[in-house]
Amino acid sequence: MKDNYLQEFDAVITAITEKGVILDRSAFYPESGGQSGDKGKLLTTSKEYEVKTTKKRNGMVEHRVDTLEDLEVGAKIHGILDWSWRYECMRFHTCQHILSRYLQLNYDLVTVGNMIKPGESRADYSPLNDFPDDMKAKVEAGVNEILSHDLDVVTKFMPRETAISYLREKGYQTRYLEMVPKHVKEFRVLLIGDYDAASCAGTHVKNTSEIGHIKLNKNKNVGANKQRIYFSLLESM
Ligand SMILES: [Zn+2]
Image (cartoon, rainbow, N blue to C red; front, side, top):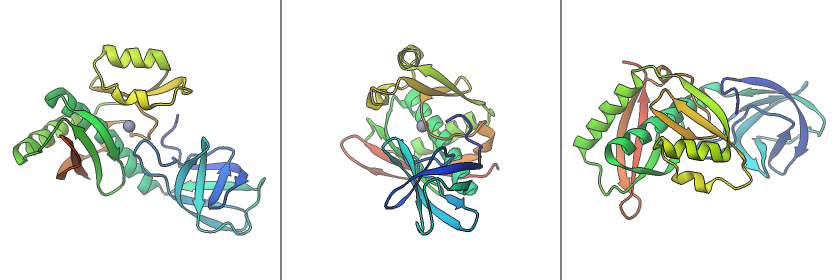
């Protein structure tokens, strides 16, 4: 939540589930908010375990490992993220926020879903019944223009009500906030320069210069007046 660039850490196993391990602390991001769970390794003094994915389980982070053999509660482990996987998720996720903001400002579209993963990510927009090539080219150029400004990405923690009124007053998207469980009292607000602000628990880059360029791929109809837009990232040209 506080340091998205932490790649290794030490921890202690606090529980073992049928599929994985729970630690007293973790830098692994569990699949949520449309972002894929982290992969990586957990090392004990004698063995190496592959973390195939990471899920949320009763508010804890469950590291789904290839085998539970010889793992014990109380054992010390060293965790190492699959950084290329995670870093690509970060680049894609920050880029999705910018794409969403661009579509909100220029086409009055609301983001109604997303799936962030390396290679190709996607997001769903409404109300939109088609995404023709000329619009696609315009959006792609517009988002790339924003990315080229090397905007700093800053995380702020705010009380729930402060965050909601801040985002509403400034005209950012707020519809998704109603889905955040009521017990969440502190919101993590992600600011991308003065272009975008959103409450998000996902992992993000520090500056838009790390993203490269967006390439909009295919789109498809996923419901009444709803389009799913797929996109990939190109290294800086
Ligand atoms: Zn997000």
